[in-house]
Length: 91
Image 1 (cartoon, rainbow, N blue to C red):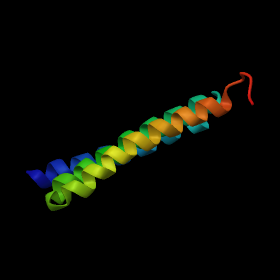
Image 2: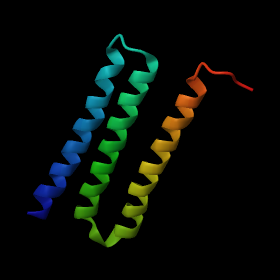
Image 3: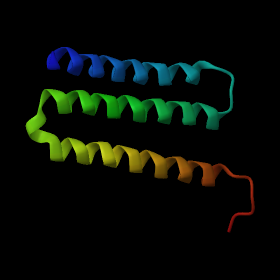
Image 4: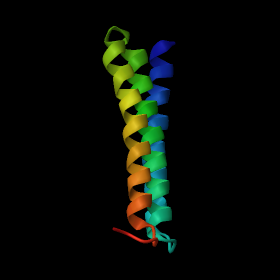
């Protein structure tokens, strides 16, 4: 039962990865494309790590650290990209 749940999380994570790449083909702005890609990539990666956590529960501290790091890194990267692309006064 745990194996089925683990593989389900892995497949859902891979689906999120591919789902995030489809907006890159569209005609929207670059920021919209980056936002869609980063959100889907973060959710996909975190879902894959949860699937690995179910598969290898003995490595829970490392996998939990990976989830926290993914959440913090991608949030900070989004703010940096938004700041760099703002049209306000730059120093």
